[in-house]
Length: 433
Image (cartoon, rainbow, N blue to C red):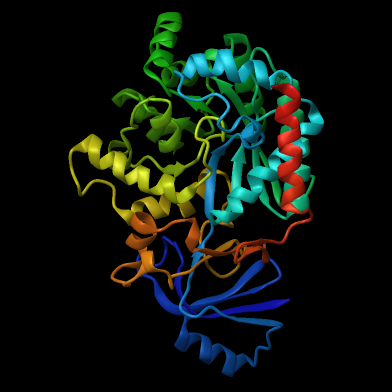
């Protein structure tokens, strides 16, 4: 099926295009799940005339913006059941006294509806893919496939849950489920994994020559604890065990020192920043300006709905730039375009979604359409800055994944009535409370 999006602005987020920083008046065409044209109105007219292309569907977007979909590069989706359940507590108290005891009650069958609830929220925020770390990933994968949503999974291994053998089996099996599902190697964090466990993770990474993903240096206490146990920061400790020999990514990265940053740069490790969660849990402000200066690639994640509460990428983008301006005491720190690139292109690359990073010929049709005909988007002095500084979920008109429109004008196009999903989530939390 050939679809034409026209009478719109286009922001490709294609770093190989020197003009990509500006939104252009143009069109985007896709056939089934692949993009077959991105260009100006003039180029589009020429293509239609020369090739005689006939479309199955043509959508007049009336000056809306077509943008590469947002990539939520760190999530714990099924934790929707703990939204606003355990707030206003320090991280370790929040985890050990509230979150872990409730999570221990979860059953495998709970993961499916809880994951669907998160997917609904992702769609309202223009998110076309998420990178998830949680238990029973097969149930979440089933929810993603049933909704038509794209998910990358990362192992949640620690000393209390799972095993290296299970992590390896999930890594191999999940990517066979459906084209929308892929998997990476990963573990929870240094402070929840013994040396023996981490060495097995490193061996598995070497076996497949694959990157590894984990939480890293989220709090000062985490870093201090690792130094006390090993004499090294978490980054140096994990690197000494060869965890990152094939690259990978780390979530939060609030308290890296210069030597840690050098390892990130040398090993090609992605930082995935989570400004909303880090602010709410008082973990601190990551030195993102330094990461950019050192050439470390930075993606964005919401973290889970228990620590952030809100899976809203517009809020994350605004906090990412705003918190850097405060940290650096510099209103010029962290440009809107750099933030938008982290939210789209870099996030996709951090997740291994190399065919979803931008709007370009042959890439996946993972697209968000933003309504610019709203008061908060006018006037159009600078569309990129409008998205980051004044954009909100009210501007999300359509969210398209693999060429299928899953959300449009407030209506979900998935396999289940959202009210049924809400009811199931409330039943779960009522049962375990």
